[in-house]
Length: 402
Image (cartoon, rainbow, N blue to C red; front, side):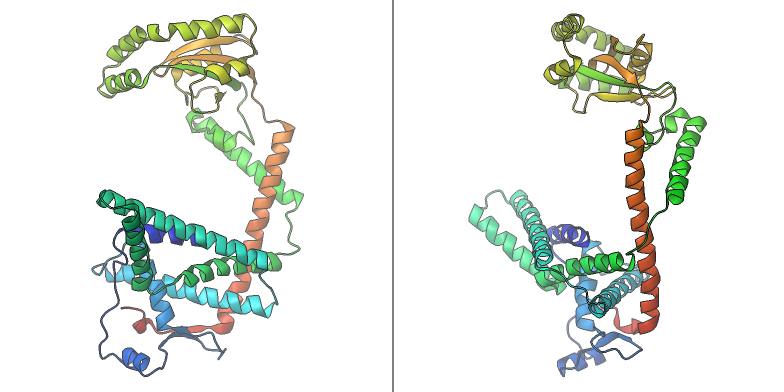
């Protein structure tokens, strides 16, 4: 959501001492004279004469300075980059004005609960900014008391808002516009659907892509990407229990390998296994005794992952030792152990890995939802182009710089 991106950017910008590009001091320009005389300087206006749709330099400048700040642009940034930034900002402001106009025209509303949710998101983002500012202040000067840190944080936060010419209401308005756009999109897309034929076509295209990638090079196959659609024949689902080396031992193995000394790494690894023998033999003995493997995983596994692997023919995603061990187990339910740079990996061949009907159906429904959102976005974009033509904004590019 836009507010989270912008608030996060604000935090980074504030830590770097606020806006990096500041408006020029008041001079004798025509726009300055107009502003001082009480007349708003208009940087963009609709040619259809719609009232309340002008973009003033004041509202533009606040967003422009903020945009420069969050992207780290400075006073010496090249003119082409600044010109692109100016166009993006003015386009964004015009888009928001059109969205608000059409939101009202269609009689849409934001509920009290939605307003509360927006305010909650904004407040959470603001607290995140202040937390980042506080951490930066504390790192810069660890002699500050909590009271001094709080004061410094608030001062820098207010400086960010003031220098960039925005307020907390600006954050709220940005997030409100996001919701308005979503509601317009849902309304314009009401009745849109994804047919079974469209869904099947998309699924088959993805499956074909997965097969093609695997056939070209098995290493191209990613279980995280494709396993809910297609899994190569002969793949295995494997569970593992890591009986791992301590950090120092593992680090030494890594160092030896990075130095190109694989023989030394292998030798040091073998010598270090003795420290793992007690736990390793206990687990193996309990497996032989018939203890539940899943319960042993809970009790002994030191892997930070979920301990379950998809092993596909021709790939060594988890290393050759684990691959050879997993593919060498005689049958489902069998176990074996591999010696790796992490320590002992005790593996259990759980089942042949296939895409179940349940998984495929779930993937299909998720794909249907995704495609439907895409179709709604396309319908919105079509209407939005009509709105742009309807208002046909005239932009004073000569007033967009600072």
